[in-house]
Image (cartoon, rainbow, N blue to C red; front, top):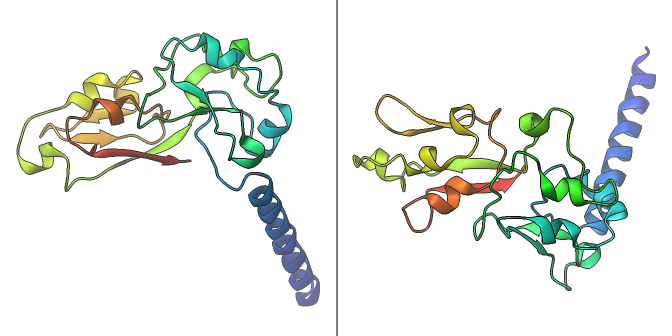
Length: 184
């Protein structure tokens, strides 16, 4: 491929990516934590009928409606993991209740679900300050595949196994929590 052709191909590719990014930002200016099995955001917004079926069947009452002032996201199901965590139901009743494909139970279950990215503040976590704890690891519904304790009793996050449910965030004994979820 000539340098000129490569230049134009790369430039057009970057322009298309930027247009897609700007369109997504316009469609969904604020991103939210979505229930497990959610389609990518633009597709989710197009498919979700805001029926509330997923909210009604959530045993943890972790799914709520997005506020009216959230643009196209208004009325869609969201999670607020710092307030009430998803409890990682094995049968994903929320996704099973969805009458559209906005939420779908993946064939491999929870294996590829990453609703959020977990981060640990080691300056706040009491195990890094010399106190024994481990509450977060014991509370994790996914188990050692997502969050374990090292030989010194300090939490070790395993991003490949963490589903981003938020149980450890709400279980943490420090205030504010030493664990934080950010959007994946």
